[in-house]
Length: 390
Image 1: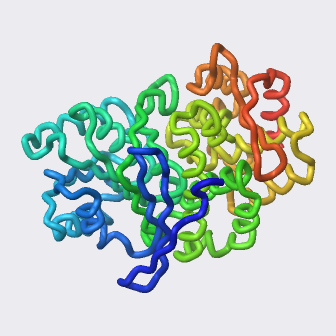
Image 2: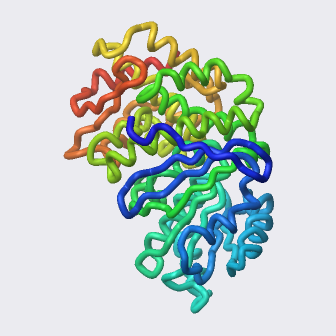
Image 3: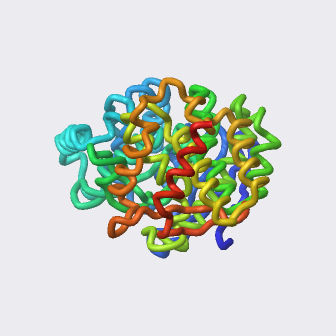
């Protein structure tokens, strides 16, 4: 895969190895830098992004991440001679909505003339923060520059790269948004040390997804290093992050706006997003929902002869090894409506990935490859959901 090999450079600061993964999109190209102890260097990296200085830096974060890392990031940015301001909003998927967006937009616009078209927004946080900050950058003053500093594994390996931004609506997840590529993504795996175990596990769900659709060797790595990953070993996490970013970068570089290959990144999301929506945002993590979606999609693939029973069993075994759910029983607190087949199918029909009333599914073809199918019927969906009953 083009661009799947990362460039390596050694950091003079601590002699750790930093991986730089390019996302090749012509004039919108940028690098994803993955390493350890990068937060203190963010300011100097920002200053090097373009010859002329940014007029101001707005740091968007949430009430969980802000108290942990905003001061250090602010100090790094100011040390580089850049003016900066922090704006914070309440943490949680339930706050990724137009109400929060409007509040943040007004607060940032109130900073004018400090905030103008030469300003830069930074997202410091997980996927919710990155989506929100990116959407603000895409729309404020008709578009300003954006840099992502993700702080969760899920954001590190998926949400921070690719330019998808937006907010949720009552009709579904991420239905309001825009494509807006960042100028850079800076991933400091050291920050994952403060991540709650359930959020770390959620991110591992996306790692399994990438491995199944693109790289069986990555699946081997996850199985072999499950213990180190679950204990948040920095070097192991940095390696997994870099492998996953390389997979996503290659796909995004080939299909920026999801007109073809990029749709494969939705493996597990058709049912997964429906579970998230039906359960109410926050009732189940994204990684947990996608894990259930992958199990269900694998059953459809098995019925179609695209994978073997051994493949299906391996996917389930790997998810369980990483403490991810494979049956409804693994999530006893999940609301009953999130497990109701009729409710889930209704939500799927209104998902943004559905076209002309047809639900599309990404299905694995062996392990390490996948394809998009628009002919999955109701019987197949019912059989897939039945697998989750155990």
